[in-house]
Length: 315
Image 1 (cartoon, rainbow, N blue to C red):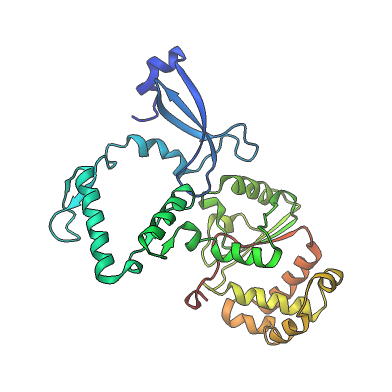
Image 2 (image 1 turned 30 degrees about the vertical axis):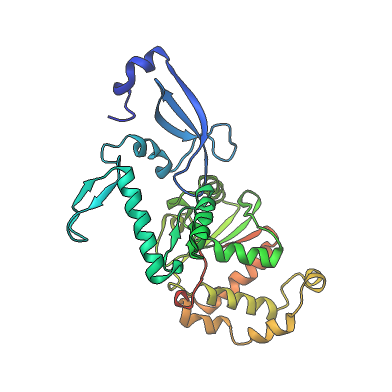
């Protein structure tokens, strides 16, 4: 059995093994890891104990990296479909045959429908940079990655608002409002560990808005099963209360912001009562949370999570 002592006991008992530090490639987080190597074969993965954010922790997907290398059912050669799509019938092919088939198919698509009919995708990182160059050479502008489907709206908003990326300092926060950012069922180990320490501290407060009673919701001081896709209505009502009651940093706004009157006008109708029909959250709760968040500033975080609205269909 992979990873069992019995499978490797001759080498392990003799001490013929070593640890190699590397980076996990199982997702876009790129966590620092350590790999246990026995007889030049990786047998175990864990977080890099020398990384203060990771220690020896690693997520389930990262741990499965060993199985990706040695699983008996992994793909070892190109497969080509025989029969009809959906029949799950395949035959093995050589790399030359598979690459020739792909190249000829791409040329046919380009000639018949234009290069823009081809879409190229890979995960974020070096592979995407290479793929983008390949797509540009082919003539297609259509590329997307993990960035396109997850953090693009958030990262774009932060850059346009602050001029750079922003980071969530869970360690030094006193109050966190979490919008469905279910770290405890996710992949970001450093943030998950920081959030776990935050949630376990009785002097701090965690508010979670999530339609589902997630593990994160189970750790919250208060959980609100907000209606799916209505986070924005909740935020607009908070803004309404803060502007109505002048609960904001006046010196900061005077120095760095423009358009405050226009913002107030646009939020005139987004009262706590208005948001009730969208979110299902009581107006009195909004009033209380708005006051708590204001009082907790600047040691308060509105945790934006992994995904933000990118189309009208998601609101």
